[in-house]
Amino acid sequence: QSTINQIAAGEVVERPASVVKELLENAIDAGSTMISVEIEDGGLSLIRITDNGMGIDPGDIRIAFKRHTTSKIRTAVDLLSVSSLGFRGEALSSIAAVCQVELITKTAENLTGYRYKIEGGKETLFEEIGAPEGTTFIVKNIFFNTPARRKFLKTAQTEAGYVSDIVEKIALSHPEISISFKSNRQLKIHTAGNGNLKDVIYNVYGREITGNVIEINQENDFMKMTGYIGKAIISKGNRTFENYFINGRYIKSNILSKAIEAGYKFILMQHKYPFTVLNFEINPEYLDVNVHPSKMELRFRKGESIYPWVEECINNALIEKPNIIDV
Ligand code: ADP
Ligand code: MG
Image 1: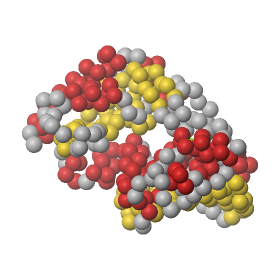
Image 2: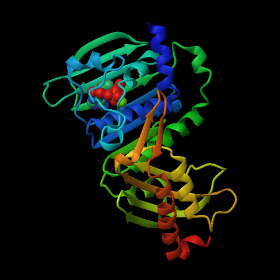
Image 3: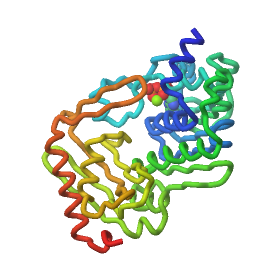
Image 4: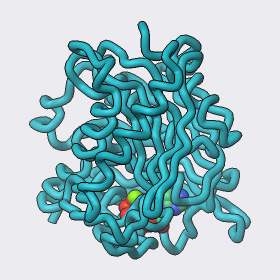
């Protein structure tokens, strides 16, 4: 049983960044308006995520750590139509199978909070404790019981970079939530949670990029595209600065990337890629979602019309602001 859980865990937990992603998504699903993420040694020794969300009822704590239990029952189609980010009920059980996990949580209805510890899938503590409303997860020593997996992890610095990428994407896709990120006690990101996307871009990317963005606000019968685009940036053959979200979710889509890049075609030079933070709201009827254990694949039923529309909107926006283009 424990081996099966460890194998299953491998599909969800690949590295500290995957733990952070799952716990952040849970905190968002819990209705939090403030979330803090702290890591030590790139998350290899410690990950701590605190939220001010709804908390977990004491009677539900053990259940939450069982495989395939979710309080958010979703079909693949719902997935892109509603707010909940979690859907498989696999994250907590997977994390607990390969890490040492401590949970402190309190709901509004309960007078006290609860502390729960589970290590390598084995419960080691369950007690009452004073706690503020919300939830804290402390995850220590990832892969402590699967040394072969631990060998595949990179240096603390590289792992910290992966964690930072995830926190950035999630902060950009949720300007209404105040998100802070500390790595080895140093504050790296702190967003206000005031709903202003440009403020978050400033926080994540700094003054130079933020001073050179164009606002996008376009709509047609079946989709809406809002956000900001900026100068093409030299980045080593990848799409690091192409951020986009589909119905609030951070998903990669080759057709969207290609359409965005096509919009930039007249200024794209070697090794330059667009800077974008774009939110796409698409009627779920036009989406096909394929959910694999480890990734989500997205196809558009109207792929042939999405591509030229996105390309043209971006192209027009760039032409209107030539000062952005010519560097
Ligand atoms: P899923 O997110 O797919 O439902 P998870 O394994 O990630 O599955 O989480 C299991 C359950 O634990 C969730 O459905 C939710 O009820 C509860 N939970 C997890 N994290 C939190 C949190 N930060 N605040 C409140 N409830 C949480
Ligand atoms: Mg989840």
